[in-house]
Image (tube, rainbow, N blue to C red; front, side, top):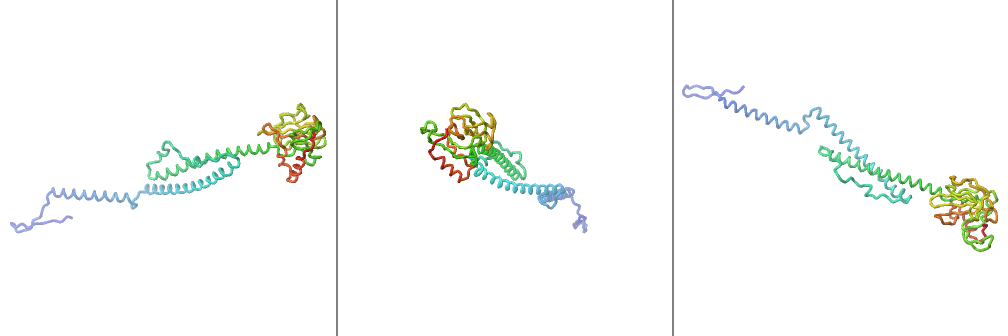
Length: 325
């Protein structure tokens, strides 16, 4: 209840009640309401910017935001691990795999290149945590690109490995006649005495003396391109195309065990020792061709001879004796 005020009236010598004016009452009411509004507004501002008063929905959204921030932190840690593992793979790829197969390493700037042109992350901007979202998305894009580059590189390495395997299988790397079947290694590659004219001439193969019918084996994977006696001096002979510039020739055979067009593997039985053509005694004349030039076959027996056997063969092959064809 509001206080009642009085004033002293000297005319009546008594106290009279002061009646407030209506305008004053309205003014007081206005200032009271204005003060209440300002106080309430300031209080609302304070409450909205503090955690003293949050609605259940706001509390739920706040927990959800914290959960997203935690998930992004975990994602960044996983990306750190992915980048470390991918870096190790890239290092082995450049310094081991590609080096072994004689392929050029992939430049670092190509592996780490970003994305130029338009802003790819514009749609992610303008949010409270845009920096976190944009950074994580950018890192994922770069990791994805690195993985694509690495995947293509490994595909290339796999193809090179397959070609390397085919090359190693194609090279004529074994002796065409087994040591236990040999009578002797009659003549090597180089200048030798011709058995018929006795003149000194270049002998561009190796002669293996063995009884007639001794098995002859393909020295590398390939395809039979000739099996006939239509080449002067060779008699019945076989030619195998190995690819990569290699070809081998097996001459003076008694009979064939393959036909033209047939694919053979290293160690397959292809024919038998004979004495056909321009030959003085049963033996195998063996030649290795590389890029259409005949080369010394003794350099290609690493797949079947021990170091001691190779040394003995080298000693006999270097003797300037008489060839058998």
